[in-house]
Image (cartoon, rainbow, N blue to C red; front, side):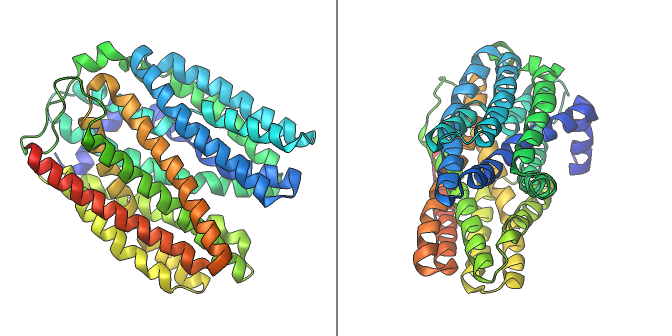
Length: 413
């Protein structure tokens, strides 16, 4: 099946409304972290407190998302995502109110953590719905799922480019509080719509068990038949996704350090958005890769591209070259992530797929916090080049894990 035909069939299965809802429903997550950072900084005048609040949100989401994923596997997504959307809306508004009334720093940090714990991970949960949808399509189910994961990878990258940009626009036109109120409105409308969409009925243990899609005849990705979940292969994929999170955090921190050194700190978000734009384009293009190329081989190729395209960051010392280097690096990110998510989805029992997807999302958040923290310390002591060194180290780790995954898959055949 041609990639364009696969995309056309995918969207025909759901209708355009679902595609719109699932995309806009993930924007609040993309807006919350940078919005919290800006809001708490504005309220306290402290970068440290703002950073701690944003970090608390990220870590709490990394813990809360897999718990929500496990509940979705057990009870279906409808009730879980609905509760998360309403609780997340209340949390966003509550954080704004605390900041507005000058609440103590610990109270704002605690509210940020509570908010992170309940924010729904719409992107990973949307991936789970494609398997039962593809099972209704007849032939070429595996190809449809691969195309769906390519689209979801691109949608994630686009949301994490658009989300911070929306925060920046709302902060300039209104205030940081206005940015989080905008996120709350999006979550209330589109998070709820995602929860209540008819595709949510296609989740839960009974549905997963009835919609198992066989592996390709290439013998690349073997779904466990004994119900095992936390295998060595899945741990490698979780670490791989963690390394991508480190890349994101370190690159954003290095970008901020360089932009600040040339007196243009306000453009950090726009420069970093270029990473998301190029990554989204590459994500869409992965659906055109022939189906005979296994995911583990795609992961290895993308790992090589990551390290090859990251080292130019060590040479930049002005915004022009930085924009070019960041944009080029983005072309390797989505293909790597799509392969990681695809392999994880196909290496766990169907009834545990939501947990697997949200574990990967949580690993990304933890990696982001680690990368930003280490790169921030290095940037303060040694400048932006040292921060970008963390980016390059993360890509080296990603390549090593891709090699491990490749060898492990061969051993399993």
